[in-house]
Image (cartoon, rainbow, N blue to C red):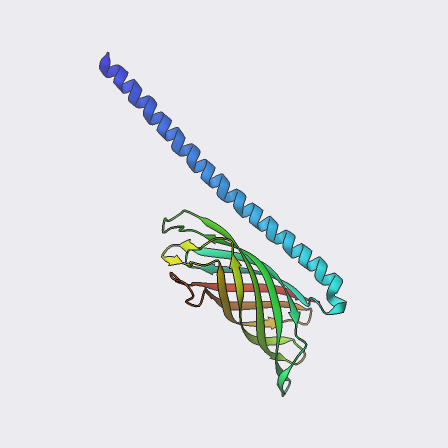
Length: 218
């Protein structure tokens, strides 16, 4: 009788543990999926708002393009939306080419997949950025181009993913990239981007991304 009761108690305990584990896994999955859906909805809403504002302001030359980006790094990915405003300046004009530039304002969401070096544990954060960018392009602003920029970013949380840590919310973001602007005003580009605080405070492992970009010009 004692053995039977002990076995029954053990079975109930194991069953409860299994149910708890299942509930925890389901809750974690639902939270992760919910965050991703909300992040994508937020980015889409921001992009739509930016597009509406850009369309309204195009004649006044306040906003010249809107864009979306997807970026991937080591155990981290990012989705970003932004707007740009041309400087309407040109240097070294020669043989149909020039050096020009623009202001870039953006909002993005990071999804790190190894928070505190625990595989599968996610860290979600927001990134607000503002960057001056120099672009070597054709004088008609169409066709191939190359660009480089360094700007400032504010992260909503201190990044701690895999073996990489950023000890400040404020970060510098620099990038180099190449792209192509089509006659129908659409643009595609690829970039390499690096985030760090410039050694202002340790730890400062830095974060690297490979970005793909799609933009529309007004």
